[in-house]
Image 1 (cartoon, rainbow, N blue to C red):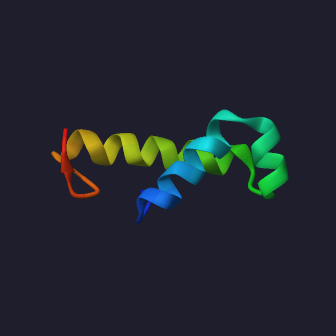
Image 2 (image 1 turned 45 degrees about the horizontal axis):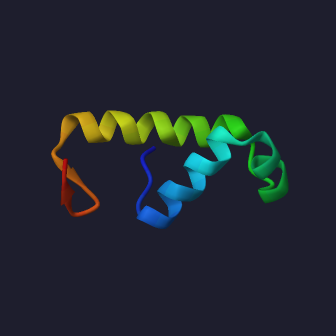
Length: 54
């Protein structure tokens, strides 16, 4: 499931890349990694990325 906003994207990236932040936020790191992977797939399928090209 890809993220729906830039704020959620940034949060999930932080969770995916920082075990300490994931623990502090109460979100399993696995969830952050799944969102990051979905966003990466979404970006490769489309030029649009939260309203920006690239």
